[in-house]
Structures are given as structure tokens and as C-alpha cells.
Amino acid sequence: MAHERITNEGVPVGPYCGRSSLPRTQWDELRSMGYAHSNLSHRNPREDPRLEYIAGWEHCAFISRAALLDWFDGYTEMLNRHGFRIHTYYVPMKSVRIGMFAGQVLYPRRNAISLSVEPLVDNHPGTPGATKEVAA
Image (cartoon, rainbow, N blue to C red; front, side, top):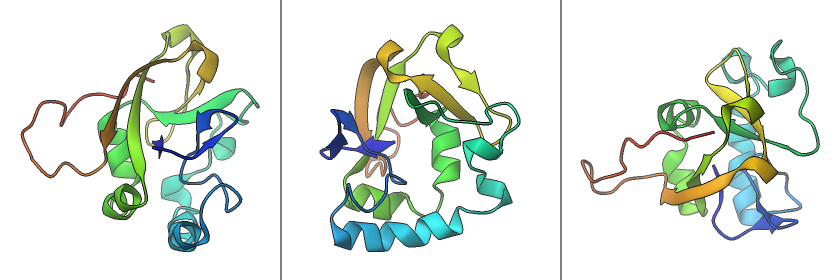
């Protein structure tokens, strides 16, 4: 998941990017999600024994759309309202590091091919793409 317009060095920023990248009104609301996500069910990739660190060239993602939506459950409408979207990429599996928890993965952006950008909230259930897997 990343913002539809705000980037850092040409890369769309994610919801945990920090207040320097987002307007204050967005950061204030997203900060509460960040606090709520600092628990055992929302482990930081650095706390995952399979991942342990995030290299400067790696980006966080999820193995599937379902894993992403589960992670951000309760926050999707707010994130959607603030311009965050599901960015789907094709990434060669040999480039992906898969974590132990909640479908988290790390991947090098340089190896990713953008496939689509979709809203987090589907106002029309049953439409094509409503269950598309995130290829990361």
C-alpha cells in the first residue's frame, strides 16, 4: 500500500512513512494507527526472525491482497480517504524475502513491475479486481 500522489525520491510513500512526507492533518490521524500497530499482531519486519532488517533498497509489502487488508483492518476507509491505494506489483520470487508473520514481505523496488493501483475500499462489491492478489 502506498500513497497515490506523495512520493519520496520518486517512490510512493507508505502509511508509516513519517510526518515529514505527509500533510499534518493526515499524519495526525495515521499516527493513531501506528501506535495501534506496535503490538505482537503487527510486528515490525525488524522483529521477524526471517527478515531481521530492512535494507535501504527494500520496500515492505504483503504476499496477498487479503493479507494487506487483514493487516489494515479497521483503517482501510481512513487510509483510502487520505489517498492511500493498493499498488500491485510483479516481483520475481527470487527477489522477495518472505517473513513469518501476517504475510509480510520485503522486495527490491528496482525488480518490481507495476501492474495496477486500486482503491482500498471497493464501493462496488463483486466487481473485477476485488480479490486480486498482490504480487509482491
